[in-house]
Length: 332
Image (cartoon, one colour):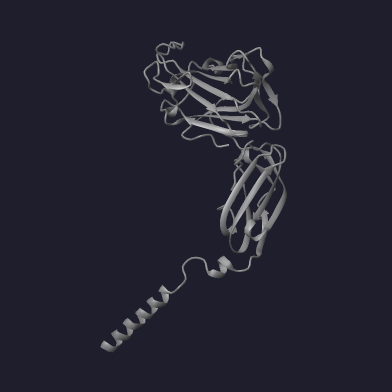
């Protein structure tokens, strides 16, 4: 019996030693072997209706683990969705497209092309056409997307400057859908080039219908700076009606602000949580005039002011898709 137990113990030890020497993770051949394509780059559908909940994904298979990239590009909008991964397999787990965008503008109803690259191996392949029949549905309270012209309840003002552009533009280059607002001009006698007020009353509301928790409310906007512009100042103001009498009083009610300078060239999304907004006086943080409590459910009016130093010459910025979202920033 003692011999049997001893032999059993030795056998267990040998098995344990064998298990300890098994390779963990990818084999050396999988990492450093010759590269080949085992399954071509393909897409699960060539026409997709994102509005109805459809999506698509890409597939490919390689002989070893590689770093790969997939780019989807809108032929009309120039929108771009990018997937990246490090794997042997491309599938629904790492390349599922639900209509979202990586680089603005957002996708439109349009034809797209997709391509995959494995830079380290010099490999690439293309799917020449994927048709987007309808774009994904987004959620939030839309302040302005300029698709229906100027809301008669808004208040718009532009200075009498030089080369003024203070109007809605229809173009494929719009960040969202088909229209954006062009703010531009040279005003050598004032910082203000133009402004738009968006009161809650323009939406048949006494106050903006927002969550009372300022940590759960996000303000989002798409802005575009043309190349060569360096003097843009975009100022958003958020006036609260703390006593809910339908009037904002600058002496005893809060106004929070978001001032933006030094934008990147091209379209970009700006998002800020309501609780992170600050009161500003002449561009500097200051104590709020009211109770100092962020109360998005008491928001009476949103305003945008386009500004530039009057000695700095012409300035311009485009604006699109002003929207409040809940619990997270807008997902383009």
